[in-house]
View 1 (cartoon, one colour):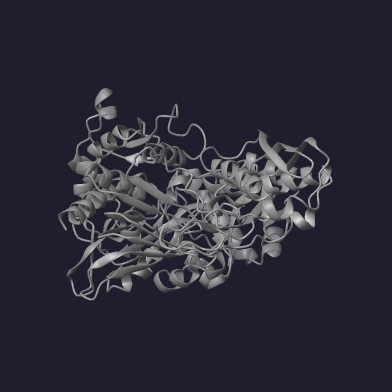
View 2: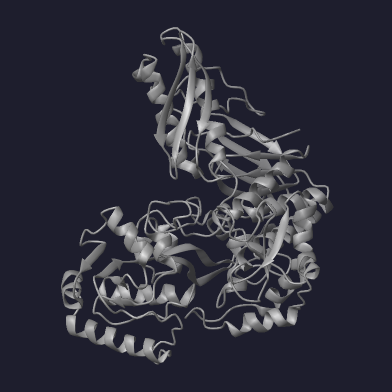
Length: 614
């Protein structure tokens, strides 16, 4: 039984297994007699996040009969949910007051705006079309062996693994589509000893990988709580993890690397190379969900936030309570729970608790993490006494100038242009603060420290080192002396930005000397592009976070550990929610998606074994 249409849009969920509610006239029944259109098909368009969305809407005299997407260039496998769900909801309810798909809000609004324009062309009554829908509250109850909370890559692999073990699985996802932060990732999965590596004769072994991993110490200034034995065990399982994905319909290609011979990245088979196309992680999600939705003993509920893990008088887990924004509830009766809810990058409260160094005004505008990453798993598990890593940090992905995250998803920004083009970064005093070749921890901490001390950070450019970015700045009239500055002299640039002119000039001279000798004696930077002839540009920059490090503590079977050191029976966790054990001090690109895959597989199997034994 295919479960892909369990969208759980509040206007569509009107059935209850435990209680029947009196039927309220739908928007279709209530408004069709009052609505009047000039019958025909009308085309309209609106701007999405990456493209113009063009569609055709067909009307009868009193109904919206069909909505066809004619043209769009939104991100594949991310925007699809909006193109599927929004037209269906509009037609089902004969209304423009339907909910957006929470994980693809801007594309959803593009569809709604274009349909609204078509309705205007057809002479429809917009006031009636925008009348809020009557909400029908339901109290639904379902049974399962295992309930999985959160459907990113960790939740998907946990569901697959539990199903393989013979369990019945119910998954709940608070967003309107699966994917979490995984679907916004590049989709790179680290593996050692994979079939793909063997095919090209690449012979890196686990010891070699761990040597590299351990050489990357001090990526964070946090106390080192990394469990290197757990990391090693994950790397040892990595080749089998890739085979698991392929056996479950998720095609894998590769290997590729970091531009050198360290070729441990594996990526979706939908790509011709590691960097071909858009968000590779979304391809993994789409393929995984296609496999799951064909399974008889799997169901998924979208737009369904989990709020409480249920227990009996003895503290044994009995299921999960979900409470939707319309007041409806879903109770899943289950013996085991797998939490795969991601981190807390979109929670100002938890960022303040776990990452107090992070500038509070950057938390939500500058992140590529899913907006659903608000620490729900941490909160629910702590209610049962779960232990957490209190001293967390964040994963710096890129350098940004514009709100909206990395420009893979927000293309009309400076963010990707300046991400790897930075070579001279200073704080508001004019002093260099950062080896720009550093990633993740060091860059994040340096930015936060400079922001705290001086209030602003600037990346300095000339035509010699940033031709594409300067072309973008000039073409789009971005010079505003607030975010982007331009001056003919270094002194003028310092005055415009508020830097000390002498300090700034001395730093430029010293840096140019390092460029000439090819060695950076101050910071050890290897990308050395001199700052010679003007005009000179300064861009006020921030750190864009792709997630958080810390979360719940778990044992070797991904069972959640309590504050007293015991385990919480029946409670398992996977993915970013448990990454403190793995990346507290070190993070290597590609390991996050491996952790999601590996920990999901392990947690799902363990949860199923426990539930079925019970």
